[in-house]
Image (cartoon, rainbow, N blue to C red; front, side):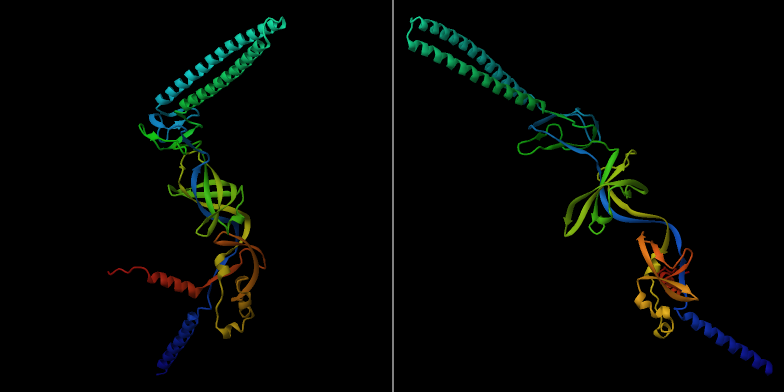
Length: 399
């Protein structure tokens, strides 16, 4: 009998101790998840999207109208400066040159004729002056000879002006004939072609674009749209990393070359164009690609880092327990101005000053903390609830 009483007493004691630890464990305010402060590199970045373009893109058009007779290049064709790209039918322009040249030759002949007439009237005038001095002719004859000489001189000047006008018209016709040959203005690569053989182009009101030539595809630029809230941190010379959808596993490098002051407003959203220069020696980047850009605005080497989760952590305890802890009692006033650490297994608030952040860690510039110190980032009860929620969402299979 005595042995049974001892066994029953031991069982009751075990139940009491187990219940004590069970209810103590259920109190979610007792356990905290911590992480040690560490040192490392922190890079503050500004993210944006942009379009990859050639540094110099030339639109080649035509100044004359006509039908495309020859087409000598196509997409992706490498071209040299002065190379013939296409030709407009030159027959009409050649006829205009022939007509202008004939008019110019006629004007030159009229100049020669006017010179002969001037020479003849000049001899007559000189002879009449001699005769008038000897009283062999009347004064009126001398005046008529002088008038004829002056008129011939004026006729020569008019003939020379007409010859110059005809020469200018000939140059215009020759220039138009020359413009029937569409030449490349730069060394580069043909990106696009807008015409075909037999197509008629009209240059009456504006110059039509025939070819789009990229001057040098080994050097590209990205035109990014940076939000006005971030543009103050972006400056020329900053390093840039970016990716494109064509090569998601490759991170390309570049530099900010210029931040343009002209605002771009779309649906009341103001952005600024930041131009990024990129080396494209491998020719992987193509014009028009969309780039996801990350601009490094600041970098700290060997910085004391605190997890951003620690900056967001705010302990929540019942009022009767918080009232017995001075650190917890001042939590509401200190909320958001520092981090929480464990001191004697109790949370304690520490004020710190922060610097730049990379989204995961934040630089600590001042505060009574040191490397390796454990900071609270969450409660164990919250972690368990998150784990249970994640497990509850997992699919269950029937065996």
